[in-house]
Amino acid sequence: MLETIWFLVWGILWSVYFVLDGFDLGLGALLPVLGKTDTDRRTILNAMGPFWDGNEVWLITAGGVTFAAFPTAYAIMFSSLYTPLMLLLIALIIRGVAFEFRHLHDCPRWRALWDWAMVIGSFLPALLLGVAFANIFQGLPLDKQGIFQGNFFSLLNPYGLAGGVLFVLLFALHGCLWLALRTHGELHDRAVAMAGRIYPILAAAIALFVVLTVPLTGLLRNYLTNPLLLVLLAIPVGCLVLVRKEIQKGAGWKAWALSAGLIAGLTLFGVTGLYPNILPSSLDPAASVTAFNAASSTKTLSIMLLVALIFVPVVALYQVWMYRTFSHKMDERDLSHDNAY
Image (cartoon, rainbow, N blue to C red):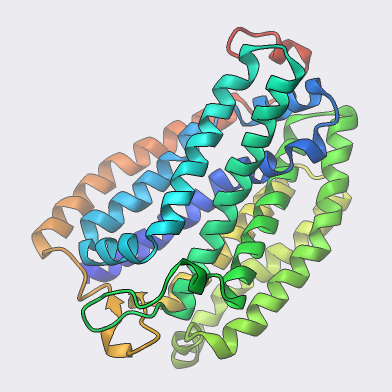
C-alpha cells in the first residue's frame, strides 16, 4: 500500500514540476522570438524572475523522492540516463547564471550572449526531459542486473525525440500564456499570437505521440484492464479542446490553468499507465524496476509520508501566496526596481 502511495506521490511531483517550471522553460526558449527589444526581453525575464528558482525546488523534490522512496530506481535511472541528466543539470546551471549575469553590463554583445545562454538553458532541459520520459514509457534496455545496455544515442530514437518535441511545444505554449497574463500592449498581443501559432503544431505533436504510444509502449495495459481509468483521459483532452477557445479570447488565467491541466493530465496519464513499473525493461519484463522491488523499507516510507504530509502543504501554500503576490500585469515600474533583472 505504501509503495503505491509513494508511486502516486512520485507522479504528482513530476507533474507539478512540469506545470510550474514549464512556463519558465518555454519562455526562456522563446526569448529572442517574443522579445524584439531589450525592454521586451527584460520584461520576459522579470515575468519569470520571482518564480523560476522556486519552481525548480519541485525538480529537487521529485528527485529526492525517487532517491528516498525508490533508491534502486534512483541508482539505475541516474546510471542509465547519466549523460542526458548531466546535460540537463549543466543546462539548468547555465540558465541560472544567465538570469544573474545578463543585467550586469549594458553592452549589447554581453546581453546577447546571455540571452542565447537562456535559450539553450531552457530549450535543452525541455527537450531532454521529454526524451527521458518517452524512453521510460517505451522501456529501457535493462538486463536482470539493472545494467543499461544502450547509450545516449540509443535514447534519441523516434519515440524519444517525439517526446522531446512534445515537451518543448507544451512548455512553449504554457510560457506564452503566462507572458500574456503578466503583460499588456504589444508584448501581450505577441504572446497571444504566438500561442495561437503553437497550438495546432502542439495538437499534431500530441496526436503523433499517442499514435506511437499504442504500438511502442505498454502504457495502455492498465487502462484496458481497468477501463474506469480512461476517465483520466478527459482531463488532457478537455483541456486541449478548451484552451484554444481561451487563447482566442485573449489568453487570461483560464487559458493558463487549462494549459497547466493539459501538462498535468498528460503526465499523470503516462505515470498511471506505467504502474507499477518505474523503469520498465524492454529486454525482459521480469527485469523491470517497479514500485515494489525498488522501494525502501516500510518504516522509511511511513516516516517519509508523515514528513511529506506536514511540509509539502507548507511549501505549496507559500507558492500560492507568491503567485498571488506577483500576479499583477507588469509595467515599466517593475523594471526600475533594484531587484529587477
